[in-house]
Length: 271
Image (cartoon, rainbow, N blue to C red; front, side, top):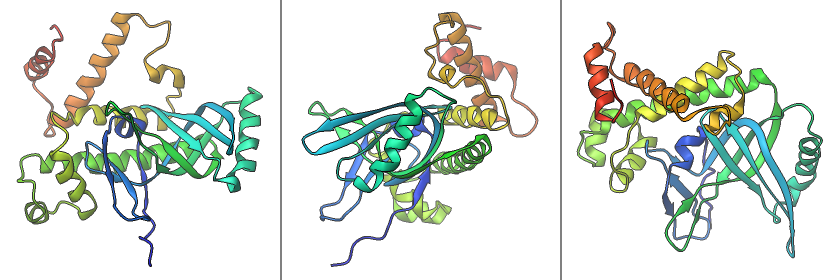
């Protein structure tokens, strides 16, 4: 028997991944499992990077396993290393020791397989089972941010082009929708509704802002800082939305002020 080919590692921000709840599993023993995102990516393996925010070891009857979280400018990637991955345990123990020493912040670049879990109630929780990882410096993290922003922009552009098409392979092929996204977009059309691509544009803006050297605290990305008042948080959300709206609707000579105000009003934001 031949095994399926190794799936490519897709660069993806945390927000696009953790907002996904469509799982596609093959029937064969070696068939890969995919998470299909709202922008049409079919994810089996992924490359992520950011601040190592949380990490712990858990011991069970089967041996040690590890849990942790990597924060990028859009949210958290939850990861694990299983007891049946002993080849990684020595490296993970070194990383855990560094993390527990509370020294300098640790930036991590990791490749892993999607590891979604669906509860009995039907809720889907996305995670990553690590295959390999390494610590990186600020320049390496900035490079990943730019590459991931570029990959996300490609998915946003393709998603916007496909919105008014008949969800068929022939229609997508005729418009030049890339083959690696067409299948996921068609499948996602039957599952996701009212997808707002602007939120992912805002994610791209935040990532590029970080890559250009605006090194604000990663904790601020969570929107849970104790210093922020509700009004301040609302103001930041409004600001991010306006930035995304401008990028999505500017033909090259600006967007009319009234158009911005009308869009804000439709979302319940006062003039």
